[in-house]
Image (cartoon, rainbow, N blue to C red):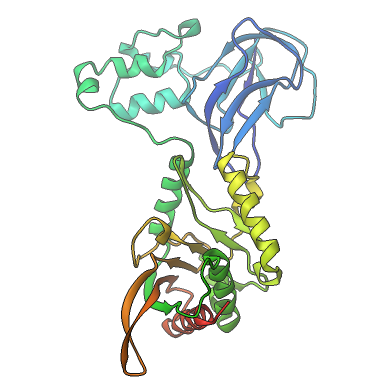
Length: 363
């Protein structure tokens, strides 16, 4: 029997969640045939078979989170065909080193994700009655040991995009020294039906030109920064699955029509969960137009290595003074969160002032 492990999926990804099996025990497969779909950072990837042969057993369940190198599928003995499609490791059990003496819990057949679950819940695997194929312990087997506790306090593990978001938020909280400044922009000179998103993008470009220090990365380990000549704008997008931040490239050199086309393509890809991984990385600054859902100002979460994120709140009509007289104007609240390790307060204020000045201009 040979074991095929979860391969390196590239882009520095270390784990993936099993979302669907395309084969089962006893199936005959050919090289490059899809075996399983897994969800990585923010994309669903199909993993093909590295060889032809008969499936002896699928070694993970839907919902399991596997690390690179964890066992994925077992084949009956068969010649291995190097398809060069997947970079993975196939281990011959007969050629593997003799195992160490194991405790009763460790000797139980269970995927690493199931062992981690058991450890987290305080369940001794030696007390679990396996119900999976070939005597494998399943998630429900582990949770079943808890009995009434499970029914009283069910846990819903984070999956897919929400899990990736939680990891990134934790990293941001641990690494960034955030500070926030706020302002409001008078939009009274705008024409009806103005494209708010395009105006916000234009304003971010104006801010970056006025204060390039905010279109930068802070390199924490080196305690240095990298200023960017191009503005690759991350756009925060809310979905039922979680938060996506795809990148609109080189926004400072694109005309409004081109930007609108890029925005529509981006929305479609996010909706279809077909955003290429490379389009979810490399933002030099981020825009969050959370005001379309509600809210005025916010202390936003800044994902390193970026040093700035601009938030746009809900536009509201308010009474303001104009030439000594009260008038009603549409005001757009703005919140700029920046990494105070790399950006000075004055730089942030100048950036925000340039954003406001651009938004006050007519279309």
